[in-house]
Image 1 (cartoon, rainbow, N blue to C red):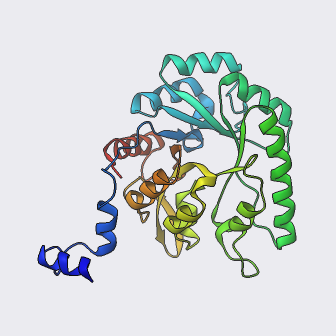
Image 2: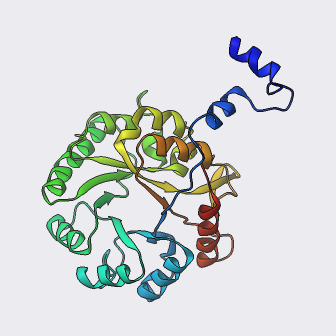
Length: 283
């Protein structure tokens, strides 16, 4: 009550003033910009395969300094040899830090290519909803096995969530099961800030509890239309980026990666808008 009395005397706790929870956010460390920030190349999947170097060059010019790739029609290095793409990106001041890849296809080759191109992470992007926790146990076992092999190869392995792993099953949250039943030495996680929100879970509370297991996050915005999530340019949706990203930063998040899969006008128009939003954002 002493704190409340002080706030009243200071004129801070008045009608329309900041709530105590908001004050807690601002009472912490100074606001920080997120620099550098990256982009998941899947955001440009409709145009990237036709001109990989051209699209990557445009993204670099917009201000994206980190790329996360995915396994496209030419592989996650887009038809280039590892040293070639590393040199190409180095010349633009960009680093490819990670890629989404198929954990069931030629793991040794993926590890070798990722190492040669200077990547740090190999990430499983999608497994689909599972029917029972016995199925999730098999997934956790698979992640531990793949993670051990990736770790021995000098890289880090992780899992990128969708909404289904945050939806309750048999009274439990599958994502929490994966966190509890995978070895932190070999398995880390990438948090999609859109999909955890779509599932109705609190990303701030989740990060406060499990944040040390997450090293990368996807920054993605959406609104619900007719009960379905529809993605939009950053800042035009429902995700509370300031509070969520500050919590992520305070709990050890290392990489902040923009991703957008639906576009109000055009792919590169949205990518430019998102980059401008990230440049101005402080958390």
